[in-house]
Image 1 (cartoon, helix red, strand yellow):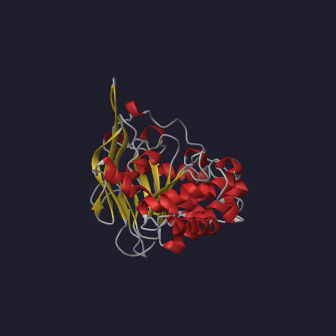
Image 2 (cartoon, helix red, strand yellow):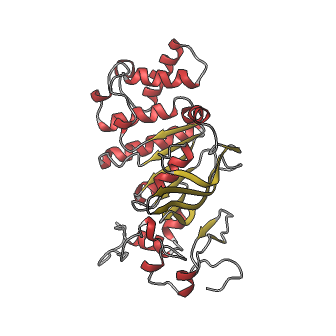
Image 3 (cartoon, helix red, strand yellow):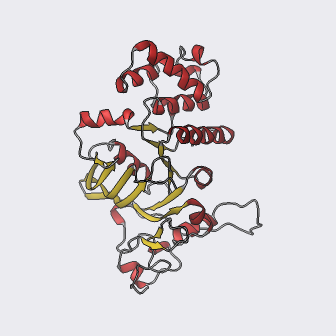
Length: 334
């Protein structure tokens, strides 16, 4: 984990969606931090709240959704309550974004060079000639061949992998402190995925950029992240160093996720299966949201909601799990 004070702090974040049948809580009390130069993976199945957490950080919660509680701080400055125009200036300049489908991030009516130039000139005090030189340099940095010629082409002239490289250049061209990468490789072939992940790691490490990597793919997390937060039903089930969480998971949900991944080093008769399904937002049970599916749940799990309890580590890097059975808070009986 990178040292120093956190660049991003999310404190007790709550995201709600008002409906005619009541208020749905999609993100419920999420707290996490990312240090400069660190990659934090946020993993979980569809509907766990991981993408909404990223959207809340970057100020892109679609109405009627809203941040109903908590705080988002960037370099010590609170940004979740900024006016729309102020938040628009933060996006691009201080926070970059990489989304799953690059076509949603690129305007088909403008060349990729013009789009990068526009972003650079919006956020950096440079003229047109300097911005165009920088745009070509960024296309070269992300591995686009013949960057001068390709800068004059439109998004449909690029393959999926090359478009995602352009989006990475677009996200990083204003030198943001933080990048929110939401499923950046899901739409790509496996071989291209590896190239994009390696590129993202290299570029961000070279520029000291922090990354919040949202994905459902534990393989991508294992290859990329320094720490990982496992989300379930809008809450963080476990958070800690990636090697610890993968090799020594504490929360039963994380154990199930790890057991469902095929191994190339050991023979398994069959993979682990987590019975049941994640609860709907309007039917999240009291206590631990995973309790109805957990084979180790005790009565307290069904009654009381566990908070994340820190697990002691020799190297001092925190590892916490929200579980009464495996990581009870100090002084609390399971």
